[in-house]
Length: 422
RNA sequence: GAGCCUGUAGCUCAAUGGCAGAGCGCCACACUGUGGAUGUGGAUGUUGUGGGUUCGAGACCCAUCAGGCUCCCCA
Image (cartoon, rainbow, N blue to C red):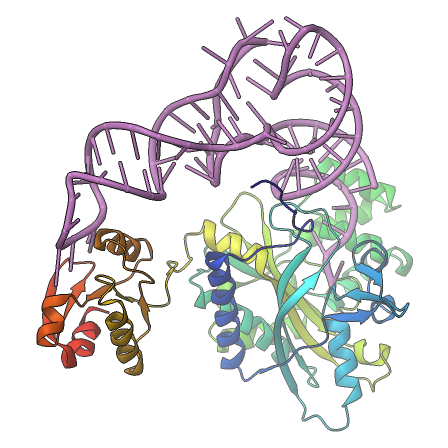
């Protein structure tokens, strides 16, 4: 390595092993989405900054998006999230789509962040949304899709939990405590940090925001009341529906879940890894009522969530839940005996492929031990050899690489023999 | 955008300011019709990059790049 050109900071290189993990997550995401009847879709990877300026946070637009000027002088950005594109696309065809719309997507996003573990500048994200139905049961369905995904990758309720809360319930609580609208965002932020901050610092921060001691005490009581959801008809119905959908064990009410202060208006939820000492967020979402209007559509309510591939990948790996990596898509190696029989091996390989097997032929007449070692490293299951003896009598030698047993069979029986080994 | 830690062989890591090393992996051979084991031998490299201090720098200083931790943020 004389001279190397570095990758762009925060980008990711997918060697085959990482690519198989990405594809594994994609497959599970697709299965969970399709099991509930959601359609796959996607938007542009490049958008104008105005799309996000409308209602995404200032932090996102000004500091955390990849913005640059194209050759035509237009300011464009690599998409940092999908929901605004979704809102625009729905609004554009609002009159012709069949509602309720159930859509999901899995694609790349970019955010200009400080890279650290679990956080890169380039990542893949699963987005899934239902639009056109505004009900606690619809909220429950989205949560259930998330829960079924968790179940499908082998994550048990002991390991991961989806915490659910509701903005309207919280607003009612804030009203009861006499917390002004002006303070609402700050207080929501305060509530969100309850579990992340030292209790003493949390108190000090609360005082800083101008809350009175009775208000702070009231908040604390509220935050430790895990039966609070019973006061909310919405959440009661959502939890009943989750029970019916057989995912209730993955769900818990948590009054400190606030999330997206920007456009969530009803139920919000967030999945956490509960196995470690610190909670790691795995996905989150909620109901949004005003998104379509913001991009010029007719009022339309929706609910959805998003999950990044980076954190989920690390979590699955640490939990020992990754499927074993198979280096070679071909489980069969045809060896090359010597230069004279080289093309005979290619011929055999073609025959086996025509029978539907994935077959790799060693690319040169190397020593057989070397070829077998290669098959081992690639974790292949069978090696097939045609040497002078076999060719003469129209035979092939099929070796089971895990047991070490080799049988010599007529060439026509090779496929059948190989299938026994796979 | 701010602070701190780290960067040495393909990988994991050693080396008081004084000859750059080990284990694993890799390659070759033992073994010219068969892998996983074992043995023997071999190659690892501009110590992230660029400056500086010093007789002498992997080590100390400055800058820079990267990724890790924290703040921020988490749409």
